[in-house]
Length: 288
Figure 1 (cartoon, rainbow, N blue to C red):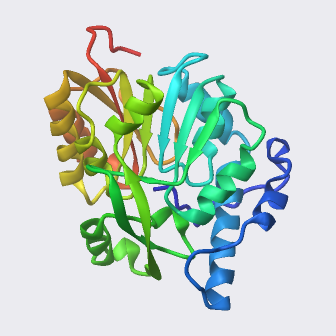
Figure 2 (figure 1 turned 180 degrees about the horizontal axis):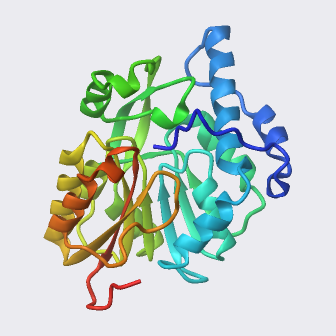
């Protein structure tokens, strides 16, 4: 989850030519929306564009982090691509990217942003334990909080940190699995998973070990981390690290077992914000 109300991005970032124009081209379609909802949605998407593409230095930090996991020519899956800041970083590292985003307007935005980017495939789809159709609940003002995980949404509604958050409407969207994506596009070198509580379901749709991946964690949701670690342990021997907030740096100097990861995420530092867990197959050389 990447919702940061306290960030004040600069709209003059030289790497974002055309982003404002691209945003104006996006219209909310599908279900009929009240004009006020349309305005809220447009404002939410504009905020996401500015925050995730407009903050100076963010792309450089992302690329520095991802160089630990990918090389030029590697295949990457960006699951929950939102407005494409991670896809942009992977593409800058000369990776081939398959970006999945279930929100129709966000998917259209991705197609606009990457329409001239060779090596980027945008799919309008959710990812879960099985394919088919899923119900997606949307937050108009904060598109990053859109989720297909009803249990996760209900838990957040009881969380004081989400007291002002409201999920406004629901749409039904297509869904696929990691195994189906691999059958279609090949085995990725890295998978980024940020799907607002659906991370365990995404990994439930994976039947083989992968070299490396990341999934989001929330301070108040340790059970989701345990479920993800348990699923990965069933597939292979993994070691873990974690990156708090938007630091884009690994917090531990060494790679951790699942138990040590859970202990690290229970510390005060980890409980202050959401972040990402990084996992890679154990080779005996996981330092650095």
